[in-house]
Image (tube, rainbow over all chains, first blue to last red; front, side, top):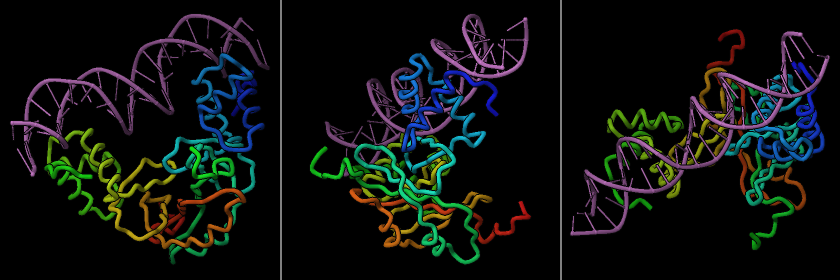
Length: 128
Length: 128
DNA sequence: TTAGCTGCAAACAGTTTGCATCTCG
DNA sequence: CGAGATGCAAACTGTTTGCAGCTAA
């Protein structure tokens, strides 16, 4: 799927390897610019699509948020979306709980669970 | 919150009252045009925002899908998104289970849970 | 009558695409 | 050298906003 190993593509993969949370397109662009200063947004979009297509990246879609991306080989987990700083975090998955609520006759193949609240850094409700 | 009862706003509320499923912006526009043919898309957006603000409408956001809206008076529930027919269904909420996985230091205020799979009508994997 | 609402079109924001140039292999 | 990748800017799509005219109360 990946045809050539260019410095731009190397920079984008490095950005994801060094991140512990899912990144939006803009976050990828900004981080990649620190490695390859004149990389363009079109290259970010094209590379994200490429890395999704070969399953090197996975799409993280929080309802109502622009799409984010993370390396695809992570173990199953859910996401926590901070309502103050807007960042997304990983939280451990617990699946048996969810299987119980599938209605009779329905077959569940996957699920998305997103928690909304304040992350540890934004926990004080008096500060904003 | 609603200041005036105009024919456009009446048309949009009628559309939701007569729908048994969440509607996207375009679906609202098309249905409202049957009642008020020259209603504009800007009025739809403005009215949806207004009806969300006064909690007459609720936002139904399935990850990766355009936003939909439904009348807000429904009890807490999750959605099951059928990967074959694309329809969204309600499933009962089960909240205590989810509180357990919030990481230390984080504060959860709400959550979104979407199940993906086949509904009872689409359960046979050989048919498509 | 008049504050608030509407339709239109222009403005915006996020994403994709066309193209001349560049570069990996 | 040449196919494929890049950066730029223009094109697109979905949503918001400015404004002159309209309408509910």
